[in-house]
Each structure stands twice: as structure tokens, then as C-alpha cells.
Length: 233
Ligand code: URA
Image (cartoon, rainbow, N blue to C red):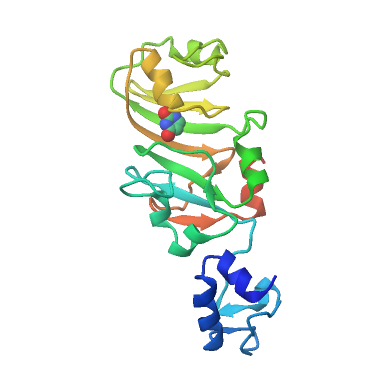
């Protein structure tokens, strides 16, 4: 791909802005030679202002989402994209969240620009387990686990029952729930159907990928090993 198009697709600016930057000699190869707008160097052999380029298409990243951020590119208020480099918002193909977390839910949120991968992760067929921890308003009654695991639980306004989900009781008002699908507000609606209310919710694991070492509000790129964990390795 021509250099101007490559940089525009990575969100480095409009084509016009990029032409100017290139003309100023700020885009070079690794040996320090200024590149021309129609250069077709390998991605890894291009430096922008002496820095390696952002990852090529096919990138996946994990964000430790804080409460209060919306999974959208253009809602009002704080957006999950505000926690990533600004350029990532302008990439083509688009960098999308892999599913969503509610504004008031924190924890593990994946992003990718690879549509096939995105569908592999969120497809109910893939059954990638997602693990949540919930702080509840009222004490658990004791029968929630059986109901959630039954495979017959119907949520209001849904037309098919939920897949079996596993509940682990961590305290009187504290539970861990593993889901194998991702419906709208699913965890909150499941507890609401039992007469309870979720006061705080966090996703702590996607497949076998955890947030270990990643502070709230921070993100990191995933490598092949991390992705294998998403799919259960
Ligand atoms: N279930 C919810 O209720 N909210 C989320 O953000 C994710 C799962």
C-alpha cells in the first residue's frame, strides 16, 4: 500500500496533512532515509517522527475499563476511546469494541479491527466464557445458582431461554457469574429476575484472559499467546 494511504488508514491524519508531514521529511525508513508519498516500504520499515508505526491491521487490545465510560465512538460524556491514543479512533478498518460493557460496568474489554475475529469471540457458537463479579443489593437467596444453570431461564422481552450459566457464591451479597453468551444487560437482568439488584459489576475474565498487571484505565496490545487464552488455552 502507498505510504500516504497506509498512514491515513492508521489515523495519522488526513491525506493532505500526511503529504505535508512526508514533504517535511518526518517519515523515514529504519535507515533514516526520508520516504516519498508513494513509497511501499514494509510496515516495520517505516518510522513516523522516529517512532515505529502503530500496529498494522489485525490488532487486538485489552482495556481495563473504568466505570463511567461508554462503549461508543460518539455518545455524549466519557467514551472508552478517550482512554486510547486519539489516532485509534480514525483507523480504517474501524477499531471496534468486541461486544460492549454498560457504562457502569468495569473490567475486561477487547477491541479489534478484525471483523472475523470479533465475530469468532462474540458468536454464541464460540461459547467463549465471560466471567463477571457482581456486588448485590440484597443477600443471595440460595436458589439462584440452580435457576441460572438450568438452561430454561427466560428474561423479560427475550424470545429464547438463556444458556446455562455458572454462579459461584463469594459472599452474602457477592457473586461470580460465568456466561457463555452476551445479551443486553444480561447479568443485571438475571439478578433482577431473582428480585435482586446489581450495585457494582466487573468483567474479570474473557476465556482464560484476565486483567492481571493491567491497571484500571490502562490498555495493552494482545499477542498470539493472549489470543489463544481468549479461546481457552
Ligand atoms: N451484563 C450486564 O448486565 N452488563 C454488562 O456490562 C455486561 C454483562
